Image 1 (tube, rainbow, N blue to C red):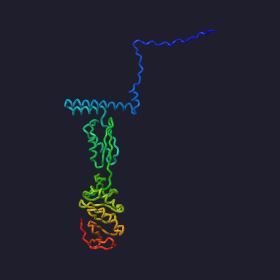
Image 2 (cartoon, helix red, strand yellow; image 1 turned 135 degrees about the vertical axis):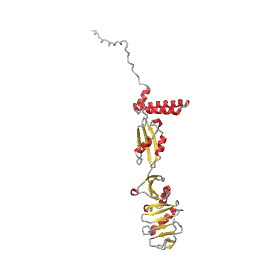
Image 3 (cartoon, one colour; image 1 turned 120 degrees about the horizontal axis):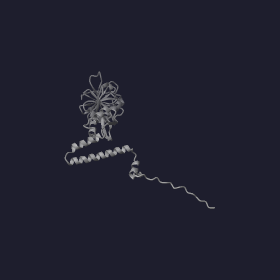
Image 4 (cartoon, rainbow, N blue to C red; image 1 turned 120 degrees about the vertical axis):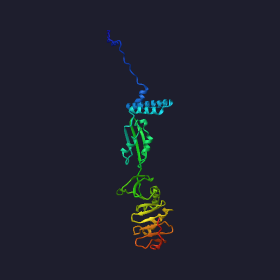
Length: 307
């Protein structure tokens, strides 16, 4: 017995109305796929493209204006045009600044003839920041479209310098940072005298020769721009020679360890003469000198020549 299989009716296509266009399916290009793979947002890409186009227009216009002999005016006008398009300094991001206030940094950055990004002179901003004593270095960069990023490297105070009655903080290179009030003196070495700030490295090397004496030194005076006087926390002063002061200080430390000179009422020790060790004590008729350092309490009179 034969069965007849009846097929369903074929689907009818809708007739295309006259004048109506069928939208074409757009295939994704290789460039589109590459753009989607980039780790940046579409907005950022648009900004980059805008800035690139602006830069190309700017460079081309400057080239043409140079060719016709009017580069400066045209360049300024174009730069202002770029600024008007949104590329102007509106934000300042600072890092590393502790002593220098954000207000001071902003005053330096915004002191410009124009705030259009192409016209902000980064080298000039850096040079102005370096005029502040606390600033050892500064890094200035643009972050489009409207931000300047400034990283400050500050100096570190390592000593106090007293000159003509004024106390100032100084860094390791002797650069003055700021004045300090006597009642706010930090726990730092005190250097006294004209030019003493420039001798900080030599002073540190001097004390490195006798680490045991370092905690006992209260201050140091740079005398006559040639030698040191050390003042101890116990009240005595040690006059060191101009030549080989480290050797003299090591000798003093050796004598003090054997005979305990510090803290016994002496006022001044003088080692400027390498052949004598002169001491002064209140109540004595004059200074005394130890000619034989092996003798415990043997002193001979001598003249105490002042610096």
